[in-house]
Length: 345
Image (cartoon, helix red, strand yellow):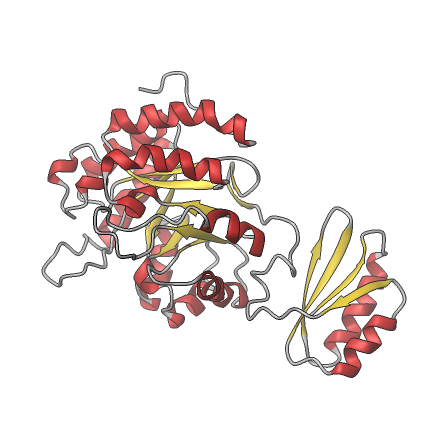
């Protein structure tokens, strides 16, 4: 349920309304928009309380919210969430590009890729130190050592860093070295992990499960938000369908749908969404046209010899740089801001 007041309602009066709600043992979440203030109620709400609130001075309306997710809902939070990390803003009109390899393989490799990501105009360096693989004998990542390598490369080249965290036990160490923590598709409903991420103090990029509905996806985000972490990004990375030509089917409709249902920034992953290098460019541009707030794109200096075997979906450095130059031209036409360095390769 939400209580709606005018944005002209004095702060003192808002606090009085909140006091009435919290006296009944409920939690509140306040969102101040350009023309109204929304007070979200979390907990079991008695009909008599709803009626009492409806009759209070300065309350314009009381609306019941039927969605199972509350904090992630745009009803609770009408204005877009903007996540600020240093000079980078995610969700505020800037187009954010995260680029790098599937996995950190060596200090030399991640340092060179960081240099290339920065030169092309990317703002975030991606790379996995722990890799959840389908088979137990596949390369599983280099672990904490990889986190250190990526943190050093990011700092050296002026990039934020994002890495995947797989278990609650590794949240703290990943948060120590990375600026953004990623939840992979297989862990979207790892509720112990999501709860831990609610208290980690780092922004979280939550990838959609490959068979998850929008409702299930947003309820997963709710776990993190309910834990006290408001900085969550939703990532569409492709879903499993009957089609076998592509690795997954990138659900472009998810971008505007999620933005209509939720205030959280939406990121697209055209690399995993297609699994084919030649499709990354058109699906990146299609994602921007659909309204994506950012992109996470695989790029490798030697895709043919990638240790994860995902080289088939990784761009070469020149392809990555050319794509970002195209985005610089495309972004303003779609209401986004994105600039590449004049010296980009």
